[in-house]
Image (cartoon, rainbow, N blue to C red; front, side, top):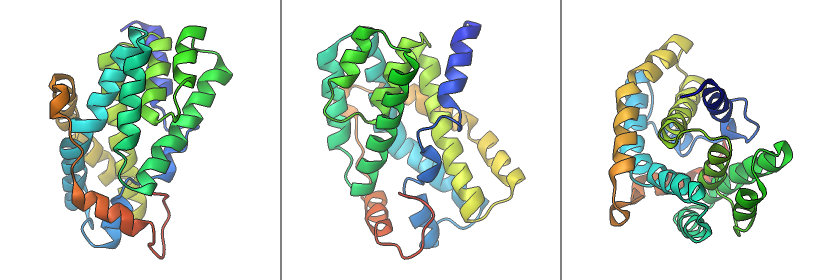
Amino acid sequence: MQSAALLHLLQLASPSLPIGAYSYSQGMEAAIEKGLVCNETSAREWIVNCLHEVVAYFEAPILWRLLQAFSARDADRVRYWTELFVAARDTAEFRAETIQMGYSLGKLIGDLKIADSGLLAILQAQNDIPLPTALACAAVSLEVPAESVLLAALFAWAENQVLVGVKSIPLGQVAGQRLLLSLRSELEKAATTAQGLEDHELSNWVPGLSLLSMQHEVQYSRLYRS
């Protein structure tokens, strides 16, 4: 990867990117409340299961397809995968999460003027802009290789999950870094899975996670918005 592309990728994957990712736990806070996640071992098990059963089989392969669609400037394919992704958010929190972060990143793309008029028009033509759509647009605009974007998105997701564990279980900082380091091979495996799936193989059928998300909507005490 060229140095410019690498620096652009680091910026897109940075926790300081102002899209509010830190305010969501994607169901993990509810799992902690229920006692399903209570230490480093159970946190790793939770993250690995979510990675391989949800992210690698739905969110990551859709991001992969959106990267290809934006690269080809295929507005119809961008619209198809964007609408499918939004429709598949099966709880109010999960839908609000991706729309809020996608909106924030989409606005940032416009404010920073990193996308040409053609790519920006495709992005802004969407009824709702979920996070994968905005991220794909930004990455293609900045000429970051798709394979690297996919790995960076997976790492950013895992890093956020680890930080939820560090703050809410709570885990120590060293335990959090040990946990994140142990996920390297799992993230590589998830990226390979995401790139190899056929369209009919995509699935986000994880009813236990959906139930936890719905329970989180009415959880008495919480730090996160999902």
